[in-house]
Image (tube, rainbow, N blue to C red):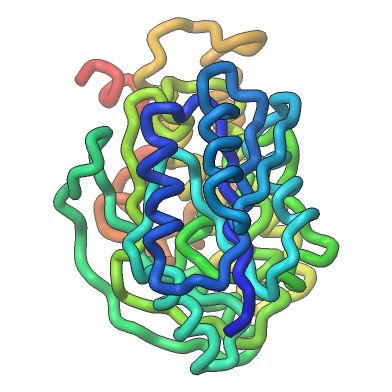
Length: 323
Protein backbone atom coordinates (compact mmCIF):
# COMPACT_ATOMS: atom_id res chain seq x y z
CA UNK A 1 0.00 0.00 0.00
CA UNK A 2 1.53 3.29 -1.11
CA UNK A 3 2.46 5.97 1.39
CA UNK A 4 0.03 8.88 1.63
CA UNK A 5 1.09 12.35 2.74
CA UNK A 6 -1.51 14.24 4.77
CA UNK A 7 -0.90 18.01 4.78
CA UNK A 8 -2.58 20.11 7.49
CA UNK A 9 -2.10 23.91 7.41
CA UNK A 10 -2.56 25.26 10.94
CA UNK A 11 -3.38 28.79 12.07
CA UNK A 12 -5.39 29.84 15.15
CA UNK A 13 -7.29 26.56 15.45
CA UNK A 14 -6.24 25.59 18.97
CA UNK A 15 -9.78 24.63 19.97
CA UNK A 16 -10.14 22.19 17.07
CA UNK A 17 -6.63 20.92 16.37
CA UNK A 18 -6.73 17.87 18.64
CA UNK A 19 -9.92 16.56 17.04
CA UNK A 20 -8.41 17.20 13.62
CA UNK A 21 -5.10 15.39 14.15
CA UNK A 22 -6.62 12.61 16.24
CA UNK A 23 -8.91 11.81 13.31
CA UNK A 24 -5.75 11.11 11.29
CA UNK A 25 -4.32 8.81 13.94
CA UNK A 26 -7.61 6.86 13.96
CA UNK A 27 -7.46 6.14 10.23
CA UNK A 28 -7.78 2.51 9.16
CA UNK A 29 -5.12 3.25 6.52
CA UNK A 30 -1.84 3.38 8.43
CA UNK A 31 0.91 4.07 5.87
CA UNK A 32 0.78 7.81 6.39
CA UNK A 33 3.11 10.78 6.53
CA UNK A 34 1.43 13.49 8.62
CA UNK A 35 2.71 16.99 7.82
CA UNK A 36 1.63 19.69 10.29
CA UNK A 37 2.41 23.14 8.91
CA UNK A 38 2.26 25.74 11.69
CA UNK A 39 1.68 28.97 9.77
CA UNK A 40 2.97 31.24 12.54
CA UNK A 41 -0.04 30.56 14.75
CA UNK A 42 -0.03 32.91 17.80
CA UNK A 43 -1.88 30.49 20.11
CA UNK A 44 -0.80 27.10 21.49
CA UNK A 45 -0.96 25.34 18.13
CA UNK A 46 2.86 25.24 17.71
CA UNK A 47 3.28 23.44 21.04
CA UNK A 48 0.46 21.02 20.24
CA UNK A 49 2.11 20.19 16.92
CA UNK A 50 5.43 19.45 18.63
CA UNK A 51 3.68 17.18 21.13
CA UNK A 52 2.25 15.14 18.28
CA UNK A 53 5.67 14.87 16.63
CA UNK A 54 7.11 13.49 19.87
CA UNK A 55 4.24 11.02 20.12
CA UNK A 56 4.35 9.51 16.61
CA UNK A 57 7.31 9.36 14.22
CA UNK A 58 4.99 9.65 11.22
CA UNK A 59 4.46 13.31 12.14
CA UNK A 60 6.57 16.07 10.61
CA UNK A 61 6.19 19.62 11.90
CA UNK A 62 7.09 22.77 10.00
CA UNK A 63 7.06 26.10 11.89
CA UNK A 64 7.00 29.10 9.56
CA UNK A 65 6.21 32.80 9.46
CA UNK A 66 2.55 33.43 8.74
CA UNK A 67 1.91 33.78 5.02
CA UNK A 68 -1.50 32.21 4.50
CA UNK A 69 -3.20 28.97 3.62
CA UNK A 70 -1.77 28.64 0.12
CA UNK A 71 1.84 28.95 1.21
CA UNK A 72 1.28 26.50 4.07
CA UNK A 73 -0.11 23.93 1.64
CA UNK A 74 2.75 24.57 -0.77
CA UNK A 75 5.31 23.95 1.98
CA UNK A 76 3.61 20.64 2.71
CA UNK A 77 3.68 19.67 -0.95
CA UNK A 78 7.40 20.50 -1.17
CA UNK A 79 8.39 18.12 1.64
CA UNK A 80 5.84 15.37 0.98
CA UNK A 81 7.41 11.98 0.24
CA UNK A 82 4.26 9.92 -0.31
CA UNK A 83 3.06 8.57 -3.62
CA UNK A 84 -0.27 10.25 -2.91
CA UNK A 85 -1.33 13.40 -1.07
CA UNK A 86 -4.44 14.70 0.66
CA UNK A 87 -5.25 17.93 2.50
CA UNK A 88 -7.10 18.60 5.72
CA UNK A 89 -7.83 22.01 7.22
CA UNK A 90 -6.87 22.38 10.88
CA UNK A 91 -10.41 23.07 12.10
CA UNK A 92 -11.98 20.10 10.28
CA UNK A 93 -11.77 16.34 10.83
CA UNK A 94 -12.34 13.16 8.84
CA UNK A 95 -14.12 9.88 9.41
CA UNK A 96 -11.89 6.98 10.41
CA UNK A 97 -11.92 5.24 7.03
CA UNK A 98 -11.83 8.25 4.71
CA UNK A 99 -8.26 7.75 3.53
CA UNK A 100 -8.76 4.02 2.96
CA UNK A 101 -12.00 4.77 1.12
CA UNK A 102 -10.26 7.25 -1.20
CA UNK A 103 -7.24 5.00 -1.69
CA UNK A 104 -9.45 2.10 -2.73
CA UNK A 105 -11.28 4.32 -5.21
CA UNK A 106 -7.97 5.47 -6.65
CA UNK A 107 -6.32 2.05 -6.72
CA UNK A 108 -9.26 0.02 -8.05
CA UNK A 109 -9.80 2.39 -10.96
CA UNK A 110 -6.17 3.35 -11.61
CA UNK A 111 -7.35 6.92 -11.12
CA UNK A 112 -5.38 10.13 -10.72
CA UNK A 113 -7.77 11.78 -8.24
CA UNK A 114 -10.44 10.34 -5.95
CA UNK A 115 -13.24 12.47 -4.50
CA UNK A 116 -15.48 11.92 -1.50
CA UNK A 117 -18.33 14.10 -0.26
CA UNK A 118 -18.37 16.40 2.75
CA UNK A 119 -20.53 16.43 5.83
CA UNK A 120 -21.15 19.87 7.29
CA UNK A 121 -20.74 20.05 11.06
CA UNK A 122 -21.27 22.88 13.54
CA UNK A 123 -18.59 24.40 15.75
CA UNK A 124 -19.09 21.57 18.26
CA UNK A 125 -18.56 18.95 15.56
CA UNK A 126 -22.19 17.82 15.40
CA UNK A 127 -23.51 16.88 11.97
CA UNK A 128 -25.88 19.30 10.29
CA UNK A 129 -28.62 18.32 7.88
CA UNK A 130 -27.27 18.05 4.36
CA UNK A 131 -28.61 17.94 0.83
CA UNK A 132 -29.02 15.05 -1.54
CA UNK A 133 -26.60 12.17 -1.80
CA UNK A 134 -24.78 11.44 -5.04
CA UNK A 135 -23.94 8.20 -6.81
CA UNK A 136 -20.47 6.72 -7.22
CA UNK A 137 -19.05 7.11 -10.71
CA UNK A 138 -15.76 6.96 -12.60
CA UNK A 139 -14.76 9.39 -15.34
CA UNK A 140 -12.25 8.36 -17.99
CA UNK A 141 -10.56 10.48 -20.61
CA UNK A 142 -8.96 13.87 -20.15
CA UNK A 143 -11.72 15.87 -21.86
CA UNK A 144 -14.51 14.08 -19.99
CA UNK A 145 -12.71 14.54 -16.65
CA UNK A 146 -12.76 18.30 -17.21
CA UNK A 147 -16.34 18.24 -18.47
CA UNK A 148 -17.59 16.45 -15.36
CA UNK A 149 -15.52 18.67 -13.09
CA UNK A 150 -17.13 21.78 -14.56
CA UNK A 151 -20.68 20.41 -14.43
CA UNK A 152 -21.09 17.73 -11.76
CA UNK A 153 -22.26 18.91 -8.30
CA UNK A 154 -20.43 15.98 -6.67
CA UNK A 155 -17.04 17.21 -7.96
CA UNK A 156 -16.31 20.39 -6.02
CA UNK A 157 -13.25 22.58 -6.37
CA UNK A 158 -11.99 22.60 -2.76
CA UNK A 159 -8.56 21.11 -2.04
CA UNK A 160 -9.68 18.78 0.74
CA UNK A 161 -11.86 15.67 0.56
CA UNK A 162 -9.72 14.28 -2.23
CA UNK A 163 -6.74 12.00 -2.74
CA UNK A 164 -4.30 12.97 -5.49
CA UNK A 165 -1.29 11.39 -7.10
CA UNK A 166 1.49 13.59 -5.77
CA UNK A 167 3.09 13.95 -9.19
CA UNK A 168 0.05 15.91 -10.39
CA UNK A 169 1.48 18.82 -8.40
CA UNK A 170 4.61 18.98 -10.54
CA UNK A 171 4.55 22.58 -11.76
CA UNK A 172 1.31 23.34 -9.87
CA UNK A 173 1.09 25.28 -6.61
CA UNK A 174 -1.56 27.25 -4.73
CA UNK A 175 -1.40 31.04 -5.33
CA UNK A 176 -0.03 32.87 -2.29
CA UNK A 177 -2.06 35.81 -1.05
CA UNK A 178 -5.32 34.86 -2.75
CA UNK A 179 -8.74 33.98 -1.37
CA UNK A 180 -10.45 31.01 -3.07
CA UNK A 181 -7.01 29.55 -3.73
CA UNK A 182 -8.42 26.16 -4.70
CA UNK A 183 -10.48 27.72 -7.52
CA UNK A 184 -7.18 28.89 -9.02
CA UNK A 185 -5.67 25.43 -8.70
CA UNK A 186 -7.90 22.34 -8.76
CA UNK A 187 -8.80 22.60 -12.45
CA UNK A 188 -5.09 22.42 -13.32
CA UNK A 189 -4.86 19.07 -11.53
CA UNK A 190 -7.99 17.83 -13.29
CA UNK A 191 -6.46 18.90 -16.61
CA UNK A 192 -3.55 16.52 -15.96
CA UNK A 193 -5.86 13.60 -15.12
CA UNK A 194 -7.06 10.76 -17.33
CA UNK A 195 -9.26 9.08 -14.74
CA UNK A 196 -11.15 10.44 -11.73
CA UNK A 197 -13.12 8.29 -9.26
CA UNK A 198 -15.97 9.98 -7.40
CA UNK A 199 -17.41 8.46 -4.24
CA UNK A 200 -20.82 9.23 -2.78
CA UNK A 201 -19.95 8.74 0.90
CA UNK A 202 -19.66 11.78 3.18
CA UNK A 203 -16.24 11.27 4.70
CA UNK A 204 -14.83 14.78 5.22
CA UNK A 205 -16.32 16.72 8.14
CA UNK A 206 -16.31 20.42 7.27
CA UNK A 207 -16.74 22.69 10.28
CA UNK A 208 -18.85 25.79 9.69
CA UNK A 209 -17.39 28.58 11.82
CA UNK A 210 -18.82 32.07 12.12
CA UNK A 211 -15.42 33.74 11.69
CA UNK A 212 -14.16 31.66 8.76
CA UNK A 213 -13.10 33.16 5.40
CA UNK A 214 -16.13 31.66 3.70
CA UNK A 215 -18.61 33.27 6.11
CA UNK A 216 -16.97 36.69 6.58
CA UNK A 217 -18.48 40.00 5.41
CA UNK A 218 -17.58 41.37 1.98
CA UNK A 219 -13.94 42.24 1.32
CA UNK A 220 -12.23 43.10 -1.94
CA UNK A 221 -10.43 39.77 -1.64
CA UNK A 222 -13.74 38.03 -2.33
CA UNK A 223 -13.41 39.30 -5.90
CA UNK A 224 -10.55 36.79 -6.19
CA UNK A 225 -13.25 34.18 -6.87
CA UNK A 226 -14.13 36.01 -10.08
CA UNK A 227 -10.48 36.47 -11.03
CA UNK A 228 -9.87 32.76 -10.47
CA UNK A 229 -12.83 31.80 -12.64
CA UNK A 230 -11.68 34.21 -15.36
CA UNK A 231 -8.24 32.57 -15.33
CA UNK A 232 -9.88 29.16 -15.48
CA UNK A 233 -12.02 30.34 -18.38
CA UNK A 234 -8.94 31.38 -20.37
CA UNK A 235 -7.29 28.03 -19.66
CA UNK A 236 -10.39 26.09 -20.74
CA UNK A 237 -10.77 28.23 -23.85
CA UNK A 238 -7.21 27.34 -24.89
CA UNK A 239 -7.00 23.66 -23.94
CA UNK A 240 -10.63 22.48 -23.82
CA UNK A 241 -12.43 24.87 -26.22
CA UNK A 242 -15.54 22.70 -26.44
CA UNK A 243 -16.12 23.36 -22.72
CA UNK A 244 -15.83 27.16 -22.78
CA UNK A 245 -19.56 27.65 -22.19
CA UNK A 246 -19.28 25.87 -18.82
CA UNK A 247 -16.25 27.96 -17.85
CA UNK A 248 -18.18 31.13 -18.73
CA UNK A 249 -20.96 30.01 -16.41
CA UNK A 250 -18.42 29.70 -13.60
CA UNK A 251 -17.68 33.43 -13.83
CA UNK A 252 -21.37 34.23 -13.32
CA UNK A 253 -21.60 31.79 -10.41
CA UNK A 254 -18.71 33.64 -8.72
CA UNK A 255 -20.40 36.98 -9.48
CA UNK A 256 -23.56 35.66 -7.80
CA UNK A 257 -21.63 34.87 -4.62
CA UNK A 258 -19.99 38.30 -4.59
CA UNK A 259 -23.34 40.00 -5.21
CA UNK A 260 -24.93 38.24 -2.24
CA UNK A 261 -22.10 39.36 0.04
CA UNK A 262 -22.06 42.88 -1.35
CA UNK A 263 -25.79 43.29 -0.74
CA UNK A 264 -25.24 42.86 3.00
CA UNK A 265 -22.44 45.44 3.08
CA UNK A 266 -23.98 48.70 4.31
CA UNK A 267 -21.10 51.13 3.82
CA UNK A 268 -20.69 52.84 0.41
CA UNK A 269 -16.92 52.33 0.76
CA UNK A 270 -15.10 49.00 0.75
CA UNK A 271 -11.41 49.52 1.47
CA UNK A 272 -10.20 51.77 -1.37
CA UNK A 273 -13.16 51.22 -3.72
CA UNK A 274 -16.76 52.36 -3.74
CA UNK A 275 -19.66 49.97 -3.69
CA UNK A 276 -20.92 51.65 -6.86
CA UNK A 277 -17.65 50.86 -8.65
CA UNK A 278 -17.81 47.19 -7.65
CA UNK A 279 -21.40 46.95 -8.88
CA UNK A 280 -20.26 48.23 -12.28
CA UNK A 281 -17.57 45.54 -12.38
CA UNK A 282 -20.05 42.80 -11.52
CA UNK A 283 -22.49 44.05 -14.16
CA UNK A 284 -20.02 43.39 -16.95
CA UNK A 285 -19.72 39.71 -16.02
CA UNK A 286 -23.48 39.24 -16.08
CA UNK A 287 -23.68 40.95 -19.46
CA UNK A 288 -20.89 38.84 -20.94
CA UNK A 289 -21.76 35.38 -19.66
CA UNK A 290 -25.38 35.31 -18.38
CA UNK A 291 -26.71 33.28 -21.32
CA UNK A 292 -24.11 30.57 -20.76
CA UNK A 293 -25.01 30.44 -17.07
CA UNK A 294 -28.70 29.99 -17.87
CA UNK A 295 -27.79 27.10 -20.21
CA UNK A 296 -25.75 25.42 -17.46
CA UNK A 297 -26.52 22.88 -14.76
CA UNK A 298 -27.12 25.26 -11.84
CA UNK A 299 -30.44 25.03 -10.01
CA UNK A 300 -33.50 27.18 -10.70
CA UNK A 301 -33.02 29.54 -7.69
CA UNK A 302 -29.46 30.35 -8.75
CA UNK A 303 -30.56 30.97 -12.34
CA UNK A 304 -33.41 33.23 -11.25
CA UNK A 305 -31.04 35.20 -9.02
CA UNK A 306 -28.50 35.68 -11.80
CA UNK A 307 -31.26 36.68 -14.23
CA UNK A 308 -32.51 39.32 -11.79
CA UNK A 309 -28.95 40.61 -11.39
CA UNK A 310 -28.55 40.69 -15.16
CA UNK A 311 -31.75 42.72 -15.60
CA UNK A 312 -31.14 45.18 -12.75
CA UNK A 313 -28.18 44.52 -10.47
CA UNK A 314 -28.62 47.64 -8.34
CA UNK A 315 -32.25 46.81 -7.58
CA UNK A 316 -31.36 43.17 -6.80
CA UNK A 317 -28.69 44.27 -4.33
CA UNK A 318 -31.10 46.74 -2.74
CA UNK A 319 -33.82 44.11 -2.29
CA UNK A 320 -31.43 41.61 -0.70
CA UNK A 321 -29.86 44.28 1.48
CA UNK A 322 -33.12 45.29 3.16
CA UNK A 323 -33.97 41.74 4.25
